[in-house]
Amino acid sequence: TEIAPATGYDVGDRLAELSRSASTEVPVRARLAGEYLLLDLSHGLSDAVLPIELLAFLADPAESPDLPAWATARTVRCPLPRALASWMVHNPMKVFDVLYGKFRKAPHSGQSPAFQSTAPEPMDGHRIPWTRSPAVVAATSSAGATKALRAWRDDNLPDVSVTSILSAAVASAFRARGIATSNSAAFLFDCRRYLRGTDGVVLGNFAVGIDFDGVDLTNATDVHRHVTHAIDKGRPLAAGALSALMYLRTRASLPVIATDSAPSSARANLTFSDVGRLRQLESIAWTDDPSRRSFYPLSEPSLPETIVVTSMHLRDTFHASASFHDNFFDRDIVQSAMDLAMKDPVALLSA
Image 1: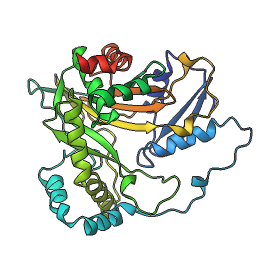
Image 2 (image 1 turned 180 degrees about the vertical axis):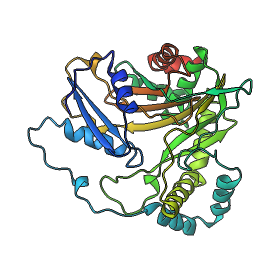
Image 3 (image 1 turned 120 degrees about the horizontal axis):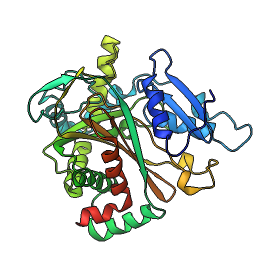
Image 4 (image 1 turned 180 degrees about the horizontal axis):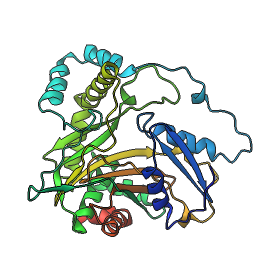
């Protein structure tokens, strides 16, 4: 559907409007707003892979592009439980670690096992009525930032991932702008890493959120240690397989919003999702003005005190967005924090 043209200043608001009008009866919606292509996708249908592939196809500069292979590929039902069984056979010594890490504490009652998020305790224990008000802000690094950050990493933290460094920079930026963060965070993992014998694009929702308690989010080394330990112990695979099995048993999906009340004050609970390099979007017909190029998602948090940070690498720049509820966090402050993080992440970590 074609709608009124959007600008670089209001495209985030247009995304929020699209999110607020979402309907479970329409899982996919596309809007052409001038030079901006907006896509609304039910998260129960897919994770970030499908919208990226859809956008790449819709923005293909060819007049009549061929239908992508993934559009006609055969469907494989529920591969994660089988992948977990195979992983357990090949890693018998880690099975106890998987079970202990998964079941040592109960997940938050209002959230899907695939997207657990530990809610920070209210600072004063008081809660007030609350309704959703999704919003998103975005920031883009300067050209060449990807190469510069990797060079700094190689010289200073050679064993730490770029994702961990960016996450620590964002957390540092939030604190620098006065947004207190909890000592726990969630990271989204792509469980396609555990699938064997798959070629091409694998669609579906393979994003699994894992909670980490007692992590220093401003310390890239500590973030990296927690994330790699979870991968080694198979925690994302266990959580994803359990979520799939629970859905097969109940056929019930949880509501987008997990509560109708909010703490009167609370520390921000950050959720990080790194999409990686978007090779599919590097050859599409971008606008000629680099300052007007943008790509970012709105991933609505299920809790008012959660901020979802999504980062990606497009050509020689980093793009990042923060999704939140603007009746709980101040939009200008969140925008300022994201701008600070993307302006010079190395300076934040070196301070």
